[in-house]
Image (cartoon, rainbow, N blue to C red):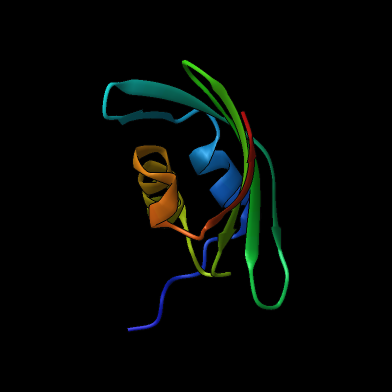
Length: 90
């Protein structure tokens, strides 16, 4: 079954303001932008927690909230487990 497309605006609304809990840490998500091109969806955001993390997510154009949160949680738990987070500034 094909993935249901979530617009960039809807993903922004869904993700902005979310609270992520991974391990012993909690992060508040602040989204700066969600941009689609033909092959990728790019999400620029800040994770505000014990340390401030500025990240860019690389997702499929059809990826929505679940995949974005999954990618962030995997990266926060172990940055070597995903290639969805392109860059970060600690």
